[in-house]
Length: 142
Image (cartoon, rainbow, N blue to C red; front, top):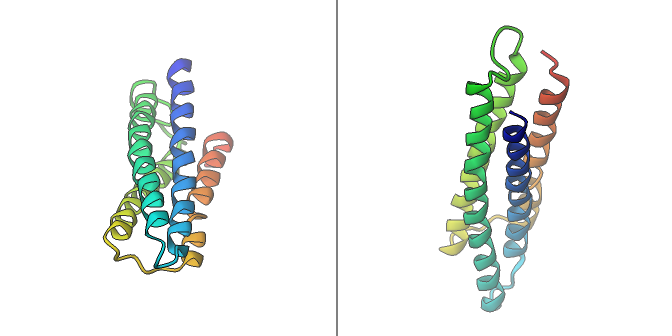
């Protein structure tokens, strides 16, 4: 079980690295001057590769987490409300991940017109979700 837990943490940390960095690329894309096509293309290439890579990392993170929950029973049984809250955060993270893909497609198609300030705020969501998830898993407040 400890190997599964260790790998789960590694893949979660790696997935979060992408969730933290991709919106920073969006900030830079939102700030690209209209006449700077080379810079825009380079940032779109970086964002596309990062999105694909972080999607690949999310899969084992989720599979290993389900393994810990369903096979080893971590978070199952009475008095495990923290796990339900954590699973809600995981669903929110998956929605955030998906929304990053939607934003990337809109940037690629020239349809994204939000400001860099909006993306700076958007970038804070995974930080708050990670903070909540770690507190739930470590403290188990309910």
